[in-house]
Amino acid sequence: MNLGTVQVAAGEKQSGFLRVPGCGYELPVTVICGSENGKTALVTAGIHSAEYVGIQAAIELASELTPEEVHGTVIIAPLINVSGFSRRTMSMVYEDNKNLNREFPGAVGGTVAQQICHTVAAELITRADFYIDLHSGDGYEDLHTYAYYVGPVDPIVREQAFQMARRVKAGYLVESQSTTGGAYNYANSIGIPAILIERGGQGIWRRSEVDLDKEDVRRILACLGILEGQPDEPPEDQIVFKEAVYENAPVGGCWYPYLQPGDRFENGAVLGEIRDYFGNLLHTCIAKTDGMILYQVTSLTILKDGPMITYGVLPSSSAAPCAQAKA
Ligand SMILES: [Zn+2]
Image (cartoon, rainbow, N blue to C red; front, side, top):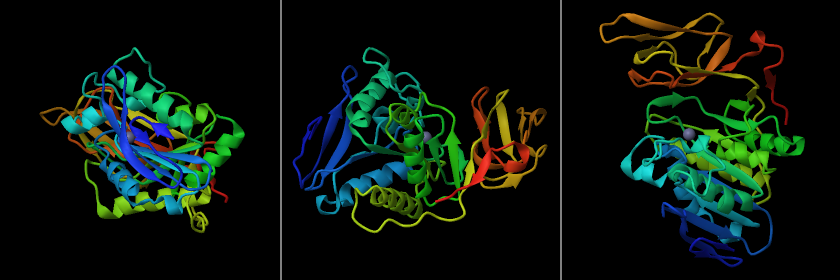
């Protein structure tokens, strides 16, 4: 396989860089080729450059996986937003302040973010049979571990992605209704089963979280037959949210969340408040359904029209938003 500067033969592992035409950025990549032909799995991280748990997990997986344990090929790209990482801009691409996970499949002649998305889509995603994208809460967000797959796609693709998500060590899964913008959404829309794992946040990476991300990837790859080892049975008690509420802040100011990610609440509960610099109440965030907090902003700063809180809808609030996962 030739990928950027990487030339790798069966039974080899090589690392190098994939150049983004236009801006000229070089994305680090490692290709691990088993000695036997087989399926190709792609693992990416750092689409959001302050989501360090996934970045560190991908760096370590690239170092640790060997051709001897791989059947087929594993491609690992641990840092997609390279300019955001080196300049510590949280999620956004330094040059255009765009969120890469809103710009897929990108454009050759677009902004830097769109150029990066185009290269990732054309050179990485389209080579893959399966795709795992590692995320966290952003530098100003805390979250409860969960994984996304996409609902409104080809049923076979959806089921394969669902079975991948089932192997994530998380109590909750979210069936996304979006088929555009994000890397994993794009992959699913072109027939490549793909999931997004969310673990950690607030610009922190812990050894325990990195290890759990690595275990998830290994468990999924084993389940797909790409990595040696007996695939584990998925946990019995996962809850699937088929509906999530994404609340943006209607006004900027100071943000005071009342609950923690993972907390459950009832319809009508107060989830947080926005106040001005004198302590005057500007907005009260009221739950629209029974739910569980997936992630929320933890910085005192809250931006008008920016993310504030996201929760999964619990079943008592809707006809069929939530189901007990079945293996
Ligand atoms: Zn992210």
